[in-house]
Image: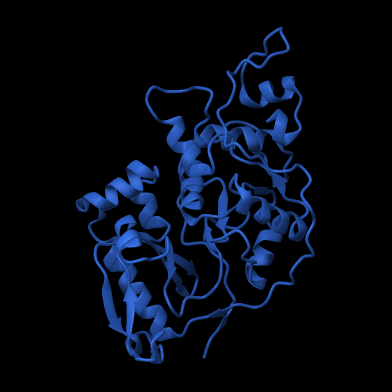
Length: 327
């Protein structure tokens, strides 16, 4: 907090709720952090004017919604899904259902026409009439209109044997960020949708999270307004070269954003896993502790100045709306 938020030693101790030592050394042992850190004042980039987003057609959204429903059915009975979501990422099955995460057990090939997509040609010029829905962790981007985007985190073995990328966006998806949580709450900008779902879960739904699904992707016009209207804006890009590019873009577009990187590992998921690894290392904050400290240290229009409540509030699916739907 001293290095990345500019707090004094006494302020950092107060924000974390610990008793300062009388010496000048920190009461925490040295942090084991990612080797590369973000600049406090990144090179500014010219803001990119947001463009209106176009949603996919009704056929695509209906097929995508049915696919997501199938991928969310019986998650607790699929060992691979439980291991990936709960064990590796700390995301509960309830959170997965709430935030549009699912599991596709095997590759599916469906007619493109059934999704409202025209046929095409593959790289060899052969007719392309099928749409691939690869096996892996399914991430749905939703708006009030419904499911507007699908991305699959492909299986590691398929990346090795079939040459697939880590993430595959399903053809026809809208290029809009992933949003978890409701308007009117403090908002944290992230790169990964899985980090966003984890942040809202561990924040007990007292924050919202937005993932750009990449380090250089901009927000569409409606999502841009959603970001600008947040009462408090935080930014936690990954601690790597791509994260530096993300922070340069975000800070140029949203100069009121507070830089709030994780204190351990590359991203929120790595920090969360390290905080719960045995034997416990109390110098690594849990996601809830990290969020409490960040919110306590930054002035906000809302009264988020103490530890967050552990009461979960009931909410409906909140996301930006009003986007232009493609014909």
